[in-house]
Length: 368
Ligand code: F6R
Image 1 (tube, rainbow, N blue to C red):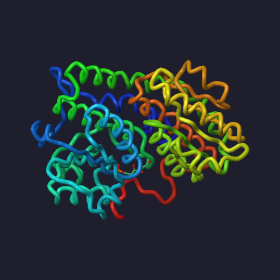
Image 2 (tube, rainbow, N blue to C red):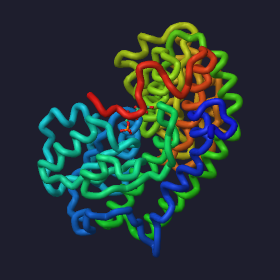
Image 3 (cartoon, rainbow, N blue to C red):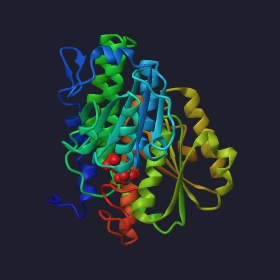
Image 4 (cartoon, rainbow, N blue to C red):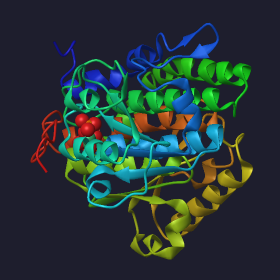
């Protein structure tokens, strides 16, 4: 049942191209984005003036990624909230607020309570969920299923990539309804999403080098992760995977925050994973990160750089270089997360831990 893999998690990492294709399938017909069970009308979507994404853990990181895309495509304010915080606050919502509740299991207690909290205030709630008929979709106004297939490994992998893709479908549906994107632009964005399973497949064909690196750094005391823009939530996700699986101290930071504190942590030999943006995207993002890497390298960090293939500027600053295929900026998390999953899994294996069942963790957190 593990399809020749030692762990379900490794199988699920390999299934990511297929999971992404399944998330996207059937959502673009006759030139339009179509969401699943659409109990939110087109008029309601047009009237949306604010979006909240509520979720926990990796699902929350998928929401952080989506914020960049939805703000850019739809010109709508997007707040991404930990469900456990949202539910006990007094967030400002009304019937023109769209709340997107993201949950693989559809049973996470805090996310469910966040949904109830939002509905009491008349917000429209759309669930992004991987489990048919789970409680969160049942209590939401609409649901978009990710169709990533069952995820057995406790650490989320294929469901996380599928959540990003599904959140992007929500963003494109909003852009379409609001007219902030022309139909041909929506079609082009969807086409770019459809190219992602092949890009992820390409990453998977090169992970042996990442595994080998994982074995070499498995004895480190801590690992830091840095990113900017959509690379920031990827850094958070990379750190979460490492904490969960390898029981190692790991922190993700926005690279721009370095001088505001984290740089004090840099010491000789500390592995720091840097998620680079494309050199062909926003030049300023790329050059800022190059200078961040040079600063940490100068202070003795061992730099592990995830960069677009052919990015020569970054080479001199990379003690270890992991290349990923060139894809549009907003889609980079779908490729750059994969080596971080592989790295965490390999470090955990080297340390002798069960990758599918990390200590103290449950697949579905149905109690607070
Ligand atoms: C991380 C992980 C957890 C879940 C979180 C939310 O690898 O698996 O952080 O992402 O518990 O779970 P769902 O998506 O089921 O609500």
